[in-house]
Image (cartoon, rainbow, N blue to C red):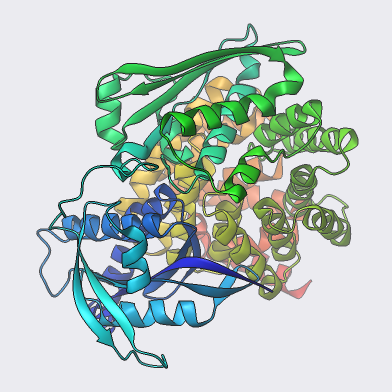
Amino acid sequence: MQRRLTAILAADVVGYSRLMGADEAATLAALSHHRTEILEPAIIRHSGRLVKLLGDGLLVEFASVVNAVACAVDMQRAMARAAEGVADERAIRFRIGINLGDVIVEDGDIFGDGVNVAARLEAIADPGGIAVSASVRDHVGTRLELNFEDRGRQQLATVDDAVHVYAVLFDQPGAATASTADMPPAEDRSIVVLPFTNMSDDPDQEYFSDGLTEDIITDLSKVSGLFVTPRNTTFTYKGRAVKIGQLARELSVRYILQGSVRKSGDRVRISAQMIDADSEDHLWADRYDRELTDIFAIQDEIAHAIVGQLKIKLRPEEIQAIGSEPTTNIEAYTYYLKGRKFARSMTMSYLVLARRMFAKAVELDPNYARAYAGIADCDSALYIWYAAELPISDILDMTDKALALDPDLAEAHAARAIALHHDGRDAEADPYFARALALDPNLFEANFHYAHRLFKRGQFEAAIVHFERAASLYADDYVSPILLTAAYGSLGRREEGRKWAAEAALRAERSAEQNPGNSAPIHRAALAYAQLGDRDRALAWINRALALDPHDVITRYNAVCVHAVLGDTDRAIELLEQLLPNSSSYQIGWFDNDSDLDNIRSDPRFIRLMQAIAQQ
């Protein structure tokens, strides 16, 4: 348990009970959409940490009071735009309260008077408005273009002392627009880091340039005075030729960082330049021609150069966070990046290869926490999908090592959650999922596998939120879109499912073209085409996948699904009968809530097969 001073933002839906009573399904769908499209991106953009989602609201903490208020204003303005054209009785509006106070931190959650006051401020805020305490008002000062309306000292429920309350008038800008001596205005502290171009002779070095880009984004995101476009948005521009002005308008950013990487042997050449989108002037540029072992120092220098250009004063903890290195061994880091790329393919051969990369990273650096988490993730996938003889206790031991080395590593908490879930211990897994998502709401593995856990239990609305987040975080993720198709199908929302099927087909085809020896995107593309009703393509792609990897259980399961969706009941049952002897208990448990099998559920042969499994 620890204490810290932090800015707390509490948000709640106005008239939630009334909205649910009028149309529960529409309200939940709209709220899910607003969370993923408006609220959570705003939190990421302003360097907040989502502590927890509540049924009709959320709790967020910020290291910077200015960021907290700027985030709340962005949220409310976006929600107001979303409500345009919606009948008043159906529009979703939030009240937001912000307080600066002392909190108790335990297992990723926050408690104490600081949280209580924020919640009470939220309760008295105007619909669509923001209420803040005097300490928040004083800290913001003239740093944001806002006015504050003095609401006087008020006695808030369950708070002993009266609190001086101010309402934020964000549609009536204040007169103070000039920057302070140490801090430029908020709109002048926004930056996007474009994916660095791989200039190496070997196209397979792409994993290294992508890894460098991600790490620079992560470093800059640790600076409370800087608004950094998140990775998921950044990588949608990979390989695209976009004009500077157009890019800045699309992302609402002032500055753009772009660069290139050339890796050759034990040397690396990195070029980087920072551009002011308003004038398209090059504010800073540098080239680093160094030993590969200097890669973390280069990342540090780039981050400090950007911060220096923007005249942002770093706090001691931010200097420490930027300067921290995940490993002291650059070769271990290289193996880790390779492993992370392979692990996301989710076929047996690639998982084995990814595990080998992570194991090599650990061999080179026995204190590399992320690599231990990577090994655990690979073993978990091999255990549940490929019935590998891996004791779950060994996988949990691997997560213990990662957590012991870095108790605040989101990947380690996610790895433990995944292993516990695969062992059927969801009650134990959920707090670790929550902690991972609190530490890093943008961690792909946490979102993807938590969505799996929710889907398997038939909690489709919640699964959709995290599958959509996973799909947005990783542009090459073709699995989440195909599972979103099934989740929307289970909810009877077929048209929304078809949109995700089209996205799945697009991503899977692209991946299959880039990795022709990998069956995973091929059988996922087949299933997507089946969902879209394109019978010829679906059959051609699934036959290609089976020819390429006839023994892969996920390929064979998706072959069952393809024929079931297409209405080929006899073929689907035949393939299912052949698959079952090689299926893990986890995969069999997946049958219960997979809408891809709906067309064969009433068939007596399917019923008999399920009954036989239940009796085993």
